[in-house]
Amino acid sequence: MTTSHALASYLDPANPGAWGVYLQQVDRVAPHLGGLQRWVETLKRPKRSLVVDVPIELDDGTIAHFEGYRVQHNTSRGPGKGGIRFHQDVSLAEVMALAAWMSVKNAAVNLPFGGAKGGVRVDPRKLSRGELERLTRRYASEIAIVIGPAKDIPAPDVNTNEQVMAWIMDTYSMHEGATVTGVVTGKPIQIGGSLGRREATGRGVFVVARAAAARIGLDLSGAAVAVQGLGNVGGVAARLFAEAGCRVVAVQDHGGSVHREAGLDVPALLAHAAAAGSVRGFAGGEAIEPGAFWSVPCDVLVPAALEQQIGAANAGAIRARLVVEGANGPTTPEADDILRARGVTVVPDVIANAGGVTVSYFEWVQDFSSFFWTEEEINARLARILVEAFDAVWRMAEEKRTSLRTAAFIVACTRILEARALRGLYP
Image (cartoon, rainbow, N blue to C red; front, side, top):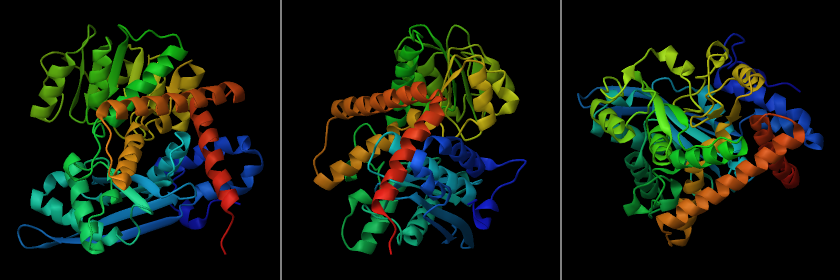
């Protein structure tokens, strides 16, 4: 059976996009699923896709309409879990792919969640704070029919943060007539958020990179690291790499790229980026062209921006021994093949950036019990879960003689489809 016409309509053979990349990844793992191949089409079809109109009144009194989405890809292993992004390029196909990768990520790390994702097609930089709040609350009210602490739990993603989650929680709670802290994660600490959540994804990238480096015999002390993206993921990862004695030799963000072979002053770079809005103009490094970033000699490369950043056109230029995916879907299947043929180890997103959802799981558990852990406890639990998950994927890769990505998909898709088979079909 092939993908339905409705889902196939999102594919452009010349540019398959994020959803097409995900489908290719599923096709690669299917031969390793044994008898579970009977259920593999489940992975290619989102369980539920909601498209909503989000009208708001702007500050000048005019009415603006924005398109919003919430996709629940699979809930066989538990409620949907995944972030919400506000971005001018958000599309249903992209959200479908991100939801599917969340299904795989949660199963790969063995969290009791399915996969979901949401978004609004909007450039939030063009909205005032009041307009942003009205947009968030209207979107939350539109998707309230499909979210809830036992159904689907949103979290922050691109251009959303703790404040946006607070508005969503409050809006949902007003509908319910009671405070429901567990409807979202990534909230402020004061209203049920978890310690360690803000840095969790970047910390997870570093923890997994350290485990992968040990596997390939790479000493991180003095190792050269290049990071694309200096936001909540890349910025935290860069700081932790620097604190571990690595040389962060290159950083790229939406505004520019900087390089210094001896290593950038990461705290100073972070302060500059916070003040200037970009790494562009940082005096402590040399400005380089965007394309030159990919060929900077380094031991570890961390793409922590958006999807499909490493493709066939630039994979051959990469000079790292280890690629650790901080972003979702930053490497295309063609680039995966090129990097593997060149002996570059790629740690896939579904393991490398799972720190955020892992601590979101901790937050959800703490909200249910109204008992909160220390940050030390959270960081220790996070490291243990991620290292155990990485080790299981590494063993699977050795057993099946596959890439780490295919191994992660084997582990995750087996868990998802076993749950689907055990639950059966109703009615």
